[in-house]
Picture 1 (cartoon, rainbow, N blue to C red):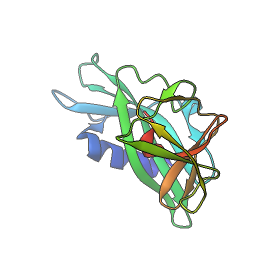
Picture 2: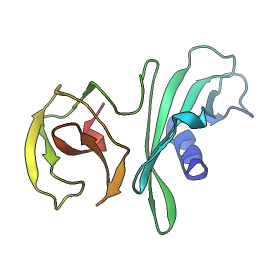
Picture 3: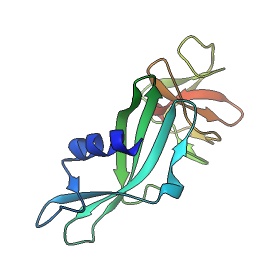
Picture 4: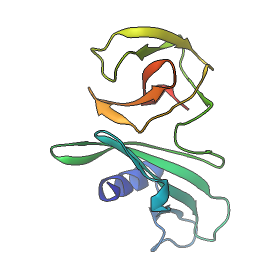
Length: 149
């Protein structure tokens, strides 16, 4: 998982491996393996982004999916106060509304539509299906990764 996600995240972030980082370069380093999470054909791992001189860094989560060909990078999200991977008290970020489904996947029935800023509780490891990473929302159903912040 890390072998597929690390180089792609570095490319997206215009960063270099922390082991070779120097001067004014932006450094990327994989964090603690205990913060990784693997679900059904999807996973995430923790990393850190910072300058070569230390300080001013950000926590990052790299999101991937897995299929017969192996792990594939989806995206990376970094912030100075990320909290954790999707979990309790996360926000829905969308213009209009984001569909909640009765199961992960685009062919699953829509059971609700949540507006921007709705607070949700994510209570599962991720599942990859139909080109999306899906997270289970406690008491609600399943939502695609791109709508959660």
